[in-house]
Length: 143
Image (cartoon, rainbow, N blue to C red; front, side, top):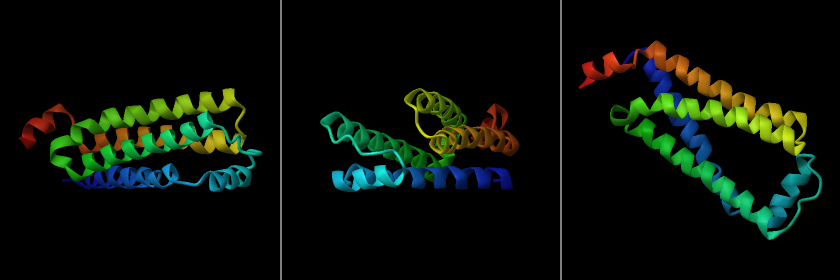
């Protein structure tokens, strides 16, 4: 493993572990959700069934994505070839989130601190993957 592959694996691991933190939000009491919503400058939290459902299910999806990403890092020799796909998903998710945030009227800080970094992280993973030389030729050499 060269230094780029080591860093790539570490970043994939950290990304998965970070995303798993969203598991906590699945179980947040509604009053806590409401307070966080207000602290973020988003106004009063619309306490309705669909809002609570969307908040919890979105957090759960982030956590599932984190578990899958962490599994790729743990089982690196089996799944490192999934990294470009995961990285492209990050780019796509980041760009889409910018569009969603703009359309929803989210505050500027939210829009640019959410989608932009996610997309840039995906591009950085792609760059590291290429620098690590983990293309088709190297996968044959690993077998």
